[in-house]
Length: 265
Length: 325
Image 1 (spheres, rainbow over the protein chains, first blue to last red):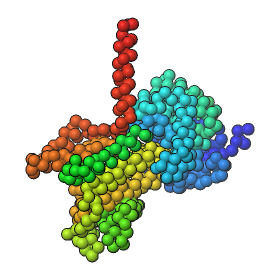
Image 2 (image 1 turned 90 degrees about the horizontal axis):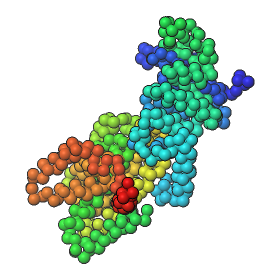
Image 3 (image 1 turned 60 degrees about the vertical axis):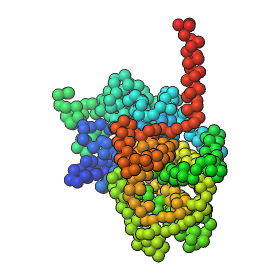
């Protein structure tokens, strides 16, 4: 069954070189519809670099990344910029939270909805009924999303004034607002306590079911990764050293050596 | 929407009538109207620096383009003054578009340096194109706005009010929010589907348009314009209004433009020492309120009224609740 699921993203022999440093070399993977995949590896292994290539911030030096959009048309996304990729259906969060701090929580989400805009500049300047309808639609949509994640009571607060955990949450909501097909989460549990991590785990499971999307997750919290991912890829020095089910990864000697440390055996 | 609209109409029409019947003397009228032009320039600087988040040091250059365009369109192309003022705005916006293309890919300090250079280029071009611009001596341009202070006030403050409304409508829309997102975090905005370059350009072009209108009103109002209008020091003057009022606050910038323009006149009795007072005030603002008087907030009649009303009713409920405790 899982083999028949349609491809969402396929990377073949992707490498990127900064100066003399090969941050990711000959990386290949396939992400299929509805999968929840974990990407782990020691610091500096190239995980975030990989994310930056998948989301258009970096252009790979060689190799090819293909992405199947919402209509299942395939695009080669190597040279596309983040805005184009977002329109195709890739959304992401950042390791160090990047919210629009001086804007309200609701505005943060409404900004991500801006591709739904139907109004022309003249409507905006003259506040026509069409503009009001558009605005109302976006505000309601943002409200729905915020309600779903129980932060709608803070919609008028500035994003920078939210507690840390809720900032992380808001970033995920913002990513979801652009209606992605593939969601890239860069260390969503960083800086969270065990209870918050637990909540986050449930939330990621919920998102996957509710929004029917593919999630690729970078995480250092092993409990979280092992607990929810059905497939894990391990990166070390820019190369995949192992890939498979959580149990296989746990017992893979190479992974233990590179990542968990040899004493962990 | 109704209350601010009524306030705007009153602020435009009442003083203009008072000026017409000489209740407000010509000198005060001149200062008020000049403040209006400075406020339009502050509005322009606020769009590019406060809302789009790009430091531009060349707004006076755009203003000069607007000023000279109006003169050329009226005197050489024989267009009616009102038409050439609006056209001058579009001409300036077009220049903004041209300058924006290579420069908006730059960030922070680089953009500031390029716009600084741009203003100087405009000044030098104006000095040297003697046939069109009158060279360093400038150009006379007496119009009805120069001769009739009541009409000048009506037109200029009216335009200011209209521009404030349009700019606020723009900021509170999907377009405006996208521009604000670019200011807040370019990488995040880009990953949220916002084309950073396009929205920076939008902010830059609108700011150029507003500066062009400012210049287009300045020339017929003063009746004279010279290349120094494009100089760096003028750009800095307009930037100071915004820093003073609060970067990102439209109302703050406009209020600061009025206060500081008036202050310069008010301090005239100090003769040249007034030039010292002005920077001292600026330093004090930077020490005690670095975000400017209003920060990023907007002043609103309606909200202020609501707040006062709610405070009064709150006190009443407190008073009634206390005996129960």
